[in-house]
Image (cartoon, rainbow, N blue to C red; front, top):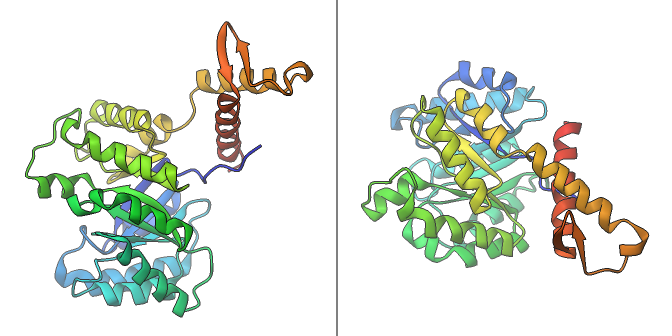
Length: 291
């Protein structure tokens, strides 16, 4: 059975200045905890956030949750110090905001290489500007030669740059959403959808999660713990999807279908590519169950 991406259904931003939140994250049902030094932290609080994130990552105790650090852009006054701290902390991932082109990935990757940072720390690029969307393929291609593991959609910044108000169906952003997923799939990267801003609108969040999954995203970033359950449920395989996948795998595993390219399952024509998709889905569910 093929090896799936690790589950990243819910990726929760936690302000680096809030030590209580950083501690609470050890008990939350998030697949990823993103300790934020950027948008959630005021300029005069950047040094404090850096210290507290370093202490939290060093202390550990986050269990199955991946721990990422979102640094400030390297062009900002805080980016260089943030990157130095993140390299010293050795988290599971470093999130790079304001990525515009492939060179932005290469610069940070070289800093990690020069520091001899252990191989498991990955890079995650935020796609949140018109230039980033237009350069999406060259950025995603860095996954083959750097630590880049995936792309994260930054819808708020992109909408601001475009000068648009985002509707509930995100119509004006749908081309960008598709381009991000296409680039990720073409380069074996994970695709993470952007945040939903209305913390208490569970119905709206679910609709956006369903939409994101339909576009092909693997998970979603969140800004509040009460968003995690919906993200986890929507980006997990449904019982119907699992049952159908099991039927496809069982059918292709029958000796009579060992060399078949196309077979029938419940009256539906199914190709071998659907068999591979079914195996991926079951492998993902197995990874969730084992965790």
